Length: 561
Ligand code: NAP
Image (tube, rainbow, N blue to C red):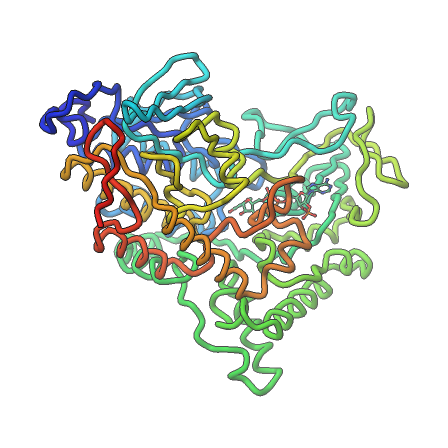
């Protein structure tokens, strides 16, 4: 990537501007950071990314717990400029494992020669906007400082694992692990009494694996989940060839499907069917085909019609009752709220694991875990002894990682404080008061297959920076009006679904309900990716009416329209 002669730092604008070290600094080297570095380089900008891990991959570097794999189908869990990338890569399974995704991102990094632009083992601790110079001053955990005209956060939506929220952890004499910080060395379960705390998408992947090896496995469940069968399968050579051949149409489909998947949104409404048996037949199709197709390829009114949602919920409960032999355990595993008000996990023989003699389910909804003891866990009424405890208790999603950085914009405002007080962004990419800051997978971006959204966001950021370069602008600011409009969209659309009540009741992470004290509100746009992409495109084609640009370093702002 050239660090000279870029559109941004060129001397041709006649301003006596301080030379900055980089055009752009990027925080994170997962899907978002890698895609961003590539985009910046393609546009002739100098850039550097910082990554806390000792390798690239982000989520796919840290979450190396047993059973970790994607819940999106592999062929659309890719950097979507796949063709342009020209990378020789075939996925092995419908839902690839963590090592395979990590390997993929490493291959992409090397293929694009990006590694030299990434500083590993380094966190950004502070980033301060200097409004007199129009630059970001960034400090790393190694104590070095950098300046850049643009700062781009690519920190990932789920990058700050929650610490086990129980007193006494230090006293525990056995082994304990957090899934989001899983060690690289192999952990042995054989012969051990193991506890898993949590039943979210992470725990649902861990549980069947540990169940096979541990002497005993005790699962502590507070809220049951709608676990949909993944129906994973290896991809044959013929399928791989077909996927390569069809990659353009796969991407085109994903860009029109509401959640960015290679699926076709259902058009059939449950109300179109008179016979209950026909409703059951459609749901059975969704259950058999596996994955999120149960939600998206069955009924178009699943998320808006409470009767349809309830029918789907009862269908899953009946499946649980038919899979899990012990009646009491089956009932405890049955969720009681609207489907998708918590993000449903995909299971790989999850419910079947509870039929094993060595697996026990403990309901802690009404009898919470009170403490970790030297020998195990204590609820209000029982003491349990374990050799190992695995905490799969979730993440401080979306804002947690951003808030942990001392990231300050105009008037020394702290980004995390502002987002917690008033979450208000333009398309989840920028926010008022933070000039020249772009967020990849930011708050209020779509709830969807993440690489597809990243691709669009990065493209939008790249186009915007190039637009600024061409027009001699050095500063972009988000107008309050656009952020207000986008927030109304995010909240209005979410509130028009059947999801809000259930999300609040069940500590759903995507409304912030899983972190004590965090404001509860939709942190994602649920309006579908096609309208989202259209809104982003329109902003550009209309000449950025929601933004203000400034041409010089004085900070004097010019509204373009
Ligand atoms: P999560 O869905 O937030 O689940 C955390 C679990 O810990 C919940 O079951 C929660 O119970 C439980 N928990 C938290 N505090 C507790 C306490 N004090 N006592 C008892 N239980 C407690 O987190 P996650 O499983 O890590 O998944 C988060 C998201 O990451 C997923 O929804 C998904 O988007 C993503 N993810 C994706 C994949 C994939 O694509 N393959 C895999 C894993 C994760 P409550 O439900 O009662 O709060």
